Image (cartoon, one colour):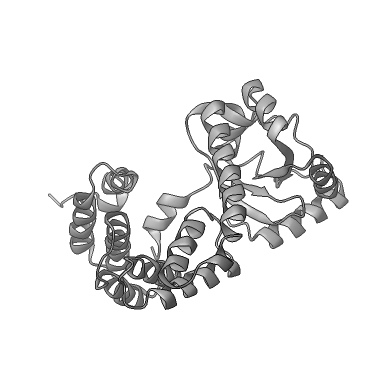
Length: 302
């Protein structure tokens, strides 16, 4: 169980005979979607789905993507595009299958559903997945992502006018509105760390943590529990960590300890992480993990 906690948090599939996926109103031609987006000056909303095997995909389609309340508003704001990866491909042409495989590689899709907003050129700018709450709430979240993208374009224009700590603060505003990890964003992070090297702007700890956390996750996924544990301790040693980051790192530290076979200590660390912010979404996930089979007591021999 190398990265069991991560799997529980990020699982994108429910393997059970799933039916009821409609896909109606969602074109499948990527080239045409980009042409339409350019012509209408819109972003593209791409749904990467598994229509006949992915339970969360079917659930998202049923609750949101097939609902008239969503389709009406979404079509006004975005160009819709479905990239479907069913097990039964008899209804897809070879050309469509080839297109979708190319998209899967380009977008580095690792779980379903994966829902992206892209520019008319196809550049991803925001990502989400299944979220509860219905069509109106989901559409509002997408509109917020689109607005964040517009805000980033405006903020970037101000960069040449500021220097030093003020530039670091402006870059911080930009990074907070960029939900996609990209070379560009990583460059901004490096510049923030350079400009706030002494931590006086209060940005250093947060961005150092953001650079280290992917290394923690990578170590966990590679089964390197001791390496992940060391990286977690490096992050926790940073001064000025905010509550959310601290809770996240202690959670991953528990994951590392669990992967090394120390279940009691892993449980203690989960409880410690939960205590940091009992009302957070992470705390809810921790409760779910603690109630799972991972921490159930084995039956004692009579």
